[in-house]
Amino acid sequence: MGDVNRENQGRTSMSTPLVDGLTVSEAAGDDVKKTSRDQREALPGEPICVVCGRYGEYICDQTDSDICSLECKQTLLGRAADTHLPVGHPLPKRLAATDECFYVRDSESPLTSDQTELLRRKLEIHVKGDSVPDPILSFSSCNLPEKLLHNIQTLGYDMPTPIQMQGIAAALTGKSLLASADTGSGKTASFLVPVVSRCATFRHGNLSKSKKPLAMVLTPTRELCIQVEEQAKLLGKGLPFKTALVIGGDAMPRQLYRIQQGVELIVGTPGRLIDLLAKHDIELDDIMILVLDEVDCMLQQGFRDQVMQIFRALSQPQVLMYSATMSQEVEKMASSMAKDLIFVSIGQPNRPSKAVKQLAIWVESKQKKQKLFDILMSKQHFLPPSIVYVGSRIGADLLSNAITVTTGLKALSIHGEKSMKERREIMKSFLVGEVPLVVATGVLGRGVDLLGVRQVIVFDMPNCIKEYVHQIGRASRMGEDGTSIVFVNEENRNLFPDLVEVLKSSGAVIPRELVNSRYVKRSFPMGKGQRKRKYGS
Ligand code: ADP
Ligand code: MG
Image (cartoon, rainbow, N blue to C red; front, top):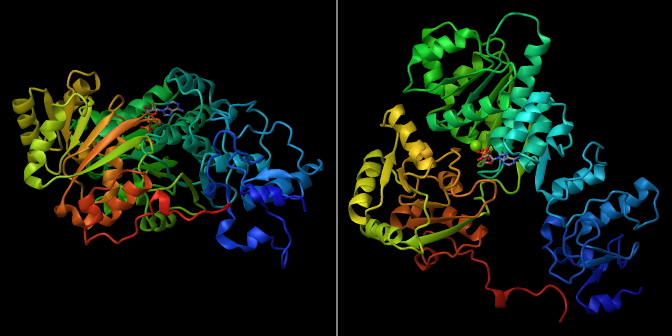
């Protein structure tokens, strides 16, 4: 076989027969990359896999094509069988896998199953469940009402993000869904587009005068509810689609009146909603979609009973559940709430957004304030608008005052003890740039879209690593670059192993004190020079 020279160049034919149909390198075990995801991107000038565009480390003997893994070899050979084209012949309209926007194409024609698989692989879309539909390639390809499409365009959403591609397709089938994707990756529209579409279509085709609510979105914080409702209004503009916001801190009679006037969607926090339902007769039997945003938080103790109470008051709606972080327990609970669930995850769950550059600094508790002031007074390190996360309401008030006194910067605090009016005003002045810095508790930790924020400083490490992932996620929306700084010391030792994992997975530097801590298992990767060489001399 004529591949020896290539092996000498460090690449291997995948089909040098050995035993039982295995080839030399396949038999060598871990040397052969099993899936395309295991393979790295190709460097300039390197051979690229003809199927997915990653590093074409191997050569497929039957086709003589460069290939990255066993998976792509299968795809390549299967492709030839499917299309009856000569082996190795490229498919018509093949996706240009190295092009970032490779899914922008004539999106009206359906993808072949190979192309769907390739697309999912490229965008790291993982799915589980029966009859999962193909991802949509454009908003216009899934029969949305004209006005909704227009509103999507007005918002400037030219293309669906990966979670929207798969999430919208799945939700439009009417099946329940558990989905995870990075912070800032467009999950809100991923559930709101199907919600608006299904509600508007239902009203349009239903002659009954009844205006009972058709959908409900539950989120853990008032701020997030406000944002979700705002986005729902924008998406539903001009359609039979009205919304009601049901959150604590706002007057209940007004909320009730609005629902009684007839709305399609209720957005609320579980506590206030239960209060409202207990005191007033609100008919929920037409609700066909229940959304749990930040589902892992919603199904945690504290919220879980309230959520289940609301769920039991509904008549088996479609349930759409979303978060950037997941756990097996959440998956189990979700499965018990809905039959025939579709699971979608984009990238690796529970990992922070890759767009956020993390810095962990070892700082003893007594020095944290001074360290923060140093950062805020440094032109190089302070990158406003910024959010500083602290662990307590009083801590937020004290620290924001201390910042203003010491550094002269205008800083405001936001937490659950402030009135809704105050919270709204603070958010507004922060978002329009009047205030460069907000000191917040967890009320701003999850889901809230703080456009423009490029820096998060985690002053007090939260109690759980997932909250950390959500907090630093505020520094990046839609993959834009952001930075985060976290202060750690021995008091956070419970989280050391998880924090090290998260920092390691993002390629961030791990502070020496953390590396040497007895609370961390030694599992650091070998340095560059120590790495095992795969091929070649
Ligand atoms: P997540 O819920 O995943 O944390 P959001 O739904 O808050 O993220 O979206 C983050 C930002 O991305 C928002 O400002 C939103 O308007 C914007 N966005 C969402 N979908 C798209 C899209 N398809 N194209 C451009 N921007 C989008
Ligand atoms: Mg969100």
